[in-house]
Length: 518
Image (tube, rainbow, N blue to C red):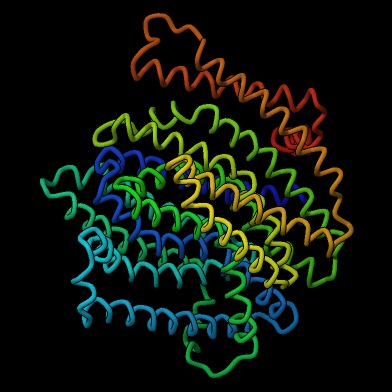
């Protein structure tokens, strides 16, 4: 696959991801207006974090990264039947792991007196989590089916599945729940059941897309497989390596739940804004990189792997670094425009804006981690991202209470960014030691150019937002939206002009490819 075909595949995934992210942003806007940032939504955020973590891992990285290299190797060496048989063994293992977890969780709820001794807010979170546990299994199964499709370079159906969740959620909070005169707790319980229903639909999409390959389920209870053992050895380290951001966010939500009412909700809304550009491009690119790296590694094309990684890093930085600077420069007006209505107050806006600045500072690093980790997984060196991830999580857990005392909720978010920076630099240094073909000088020069252009753009958008005259509509909601729109448009112009002025050939080639297909 050529590099621009790689971008084309990422573009298809990114296009569907864009639809999903827009729906996801709309659902968060509607949720903020309906529930605000309070005790009930805090409990939901904590309860939903577990299946959401599984969704991130299974749809956006870990299982695909552990599964696809082995699947591709079996496919090339032993044929499709052997690859599907391997898939059936993995499906059985995932099903058994879920059963153990589910019986343990529900057993705790039903048979121990500890649950009834929990404080009210913790009991509320466990009530919501009890409804959402089946959704976790549905995501496990759908994630495995999606990995099979991704390994065969069929990316559309897995990308479609997240649209189902966001559309179902949006419909619930925008049309169904507001019409019901019910307490907030009951409304959230109904939302949890709607999410479970969406999980069934997500699984159905993958099931249909598998076509005749569904026959592997007939052999699901076959006996031992050496390939399955390889997968089970790889999945633990892969999850540890890919889940750093989401474990850090879960820790943020937990610390916020402990420290102050409403903080988990504030961090949730801020992290959702940070993840919009992250999921739109970086995760989409890493989705198509894993099978690409796996094919290159299986053919021992180390130089091509280094070239693909260099190209991918530069492509990610060209998009993500300006996005991070823009989020920092316009954090408060973005949050105010999107969320400040209904139950979401002006005080919530200030806190969410501070959290968004803290998260956006680490956005480039978290965008690059899946890209470089995918190279290690393609080579089946899964322990390296795992060790780097554990170190990064440890840094985050140490910094959380310290930075909370210094900077409040914004400091808590910034500790996540510091952890991401440490994780990326460790991975990059170790990959450079393993692959001398990586052109670090070219990457560094390009990143400095993008940083300079991004800072220029950030200053420009802040000035445009603050100083552009709008006449009679300069104040109020309409004025805020118009100023924000003009600032973003000006930022895009600043970015394009700066890229051409500094001679970024990657951007020129991207424009030629987009408009002239050269």
